[in-house]
Length: 497
Image (cartoon, rainbow, N blue to C red; front, top):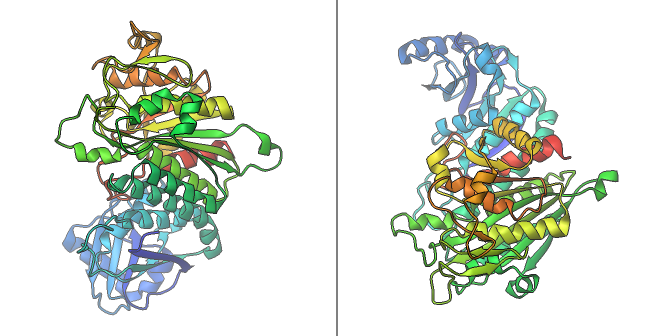
C-alpha cells in the first residue's frame, strides 16, 4: 500500500483540527451529520462559494483555510453534483480526486455522507481504494525524491457503519495491492526486470498459497515451444514461462474447470532484426504490461481468498537483435505443431502468446482464457487511449468483459474477427505468417492468436494504449497504470465465484 497515505474508518465525528472534508451539491449543503458539526460555520461554505464561483458540480473543490469559529484548520468542500449525478458517483474516482486536493495535509478527517444522507459501506471502501490508488508513486531510483518534504497523510473516513466499511475494504485492499504490484513491474527498468527476475517476483505469490511452476528454456524446448523460444534467442537473458495456480473454489466447484489469464511478458522489445526507431524505444520496458496485470490479478484473487480456481500464465522474454536472433523469412514451429513464417520480428508478442495459449488450453482445459498484451500500435490508431481493444470468439465472455469495464472504468471496445481477416495471415511457405501489413493490424494480430486457442472460449485484450504511458486520471498518476487488474477481478467476482 502507498507510503503517502494511511487510511482508517471511524464513526462520523466532529473534527479536532487538521483538514475536514465534506461533500456538497448545488444547494451547498453537506450531509445532516456534518451540517450539525459545522454549526454556525455552515454559512462559510455558501459565502466562500459565492466568491470562488463554486457551484458544487461533480469533482470540484472549495478550499477554506482557517475557517472562523471552527475546530478544523482547513475545510475542504467537494462537489458531487445534484441528486442524479450524486447517485452515479464513482467512489474510487471521488477518493482519488480528494487525495489530489489534499496537498501537504497530514491529518485529514472525511465526513463520508452525501447531502441527502449517508453513503453505504461499499461506497466507503471504494472511496478508500481511490485514495490509495491516487497516492501511488514509483520513485525508488530517485536519490532526491520529489516528495522528500511530504509526510504521509493520515485519513480518517467517518462512516455510519464502521464494521461494514472495514469488511468491504478487505477485498479492495487486496485489489489495491494487486494494482500496485502491476504498476511496479511495468515501471521497473529493463536492466532490473529481465525474464528470470520477473519470474522470481511472480514466484513470490507462493506465500499467499498460489502454486507456482516456472519452466526454463530446456523445459520449454522439450514441449516444442519454438515460437516463444524463437523470440528470446537473440538475447543473452534466458526466457521463462511462469504458471500461477490459485485453487480457491469450494465444494462441488473445487473440481470445476479453472478460469485462465495469459499475459505477454516481453521485458524489453527492441523490435529484434526489424529494429524499432530510437525515439521512444525506452518505453518498450513496458511491453510486459499484460504479464504484470496477470501477476497483480493473481495476487488480488489470492489475497482476498477468491472462491475460484484460476490460472495465470506469463511468457517472459527479451526481443534483442544479436547474431542469433530470428530473421524475417525464418520459419518457426510452435508447440501446436503449426509453422509460422516470420515477416517482421517486431511482431513478437503474438509469437510468445501462441505457445502460452496452446499450453494453457492443452494442459488445464480452462472454462475460458483471457489474454492481455501490449500487442499493436494499430490499436492506438483505432481507439486512442480510452479503451482497450477486445477480440473474442465467445459472445457471453465478451459481454461480461464489457460490463466489467463499464463498472470499473477500465473500458474495452469490441473489435471484429472474421474469415476475411484470417486469410490475410495465410503464408505461402508455412501454416501462418506473423504479420500482414498495415491494414487491420490489430485484427490480424488477434486472428493469429485465435489459431492457437484450439476452440476454447477466449478473449484477447490489446492494451497497448492503456497499459503504459496512458493519460493520468484521478486514480492513476503513474506511467505504468496497472490496467486490467480491477477489470478482471470484477469479471471473476461477478460471474465465476
